[in-house]
Amino acid sequence: MTSTLTLADRSRDEIRRYYGEVLGTSDDLKTGACCTPDSLPTRLRALIADIHPEVRARFYGCGAPIPSALEGATVLDLGCGTGRDAYLLSRLVGEDGRVIGVDMTPEQLEVARTYRDWHVERFDFEASNVEFLEGYMEDLAALGIADDSVDAVVSNCVFNLSPDKPRLLAEVFRVLRPGGELHFSDVFADRRIPAELREDPVLIGECLAGAMYIEDFRRLLAEVGCADVRQLAGSPVELIDPEIECKIGMVEFTSRTFSAFKLELEDRCEDYGQVATYLGTIEGHPHAFELDDHHRFEAGRPQTVCGNTANMLSRTRYARHFDVAGDRCVHYGLFGCEPGRTVDPESGAGRTACC
Image 1: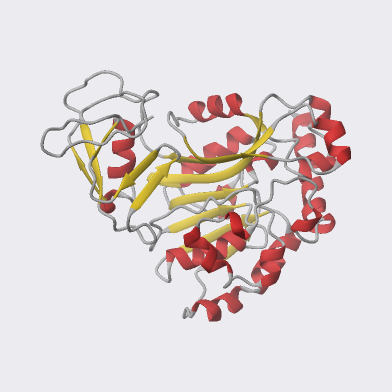
Image 2: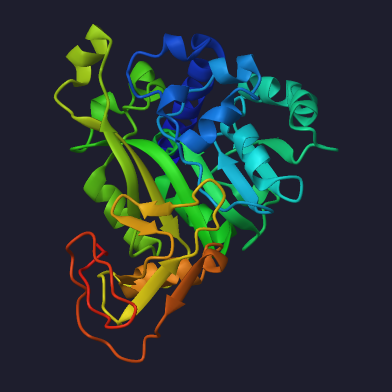
């Protein structure tokens, strides 16, 4: 136990140094994992202009883990850094919502806090709805974040930096309310990283040393009770720096965005004859809404869904935006897995739309 704690402390010290001293802006990164504003969904690009330039310049995320339907929600941003995503979330939750940013690097938090009042004025709010806390994301209780108190947890390329991922995920699902959502982006590997490379300071800071083998990630989520995690997006990570390529070029890295709900879900897609219809009422999605990379709901068009998807739409903050018909009284076996199923509202005929 002592050596594990020592390794964790050493890793955290390296991360603080890398993000607090080595990196000045995202241009200093040595991989292609960091996302540019052009890669954001259209609904978010317009909001980026209202984020302070220094906050934008010191952004090191690898995706766009900003969910929809957040009006009035309480959102926790893990590894918030200088606050780019936290301030985007501030706009999306509105003055009735709340955003909590957590980070362990003082230099990053100093920048985030410096511009709180600037963003209040820019957003035309009466007061800030964002607070920034210094601490460890594996110990949210120490920061006063209570059980079942958060509607959504977001994280952008920081899970890989955690020296204790099982504890981190346990904390996430502790603070989420029933029906709450973990929505995050991170770097993943196609194999387990060799032990000697997991302690390399540059590889740690570049989010490579701690990148999880994707199958180990799936197993870890199952251990904390998450039976059905959904991928929203994925793309390869380019190793730009020749020295990094020489060290770890045998590993293929991908940047992926996932969503996981705090719900009782089954580990397979089961068929209960349920049908979901999107009402077209989520802001920024008048014509269609994508729950994940294989569930696209056109407004007004009924689609058959598996039991897990029905729960994700009817027992979360999305419930007011969907009409979900049917219950779980009759089971019809495994749900078919062909994409694109729609259903005729009168005859019930159609093709499969679930995973």
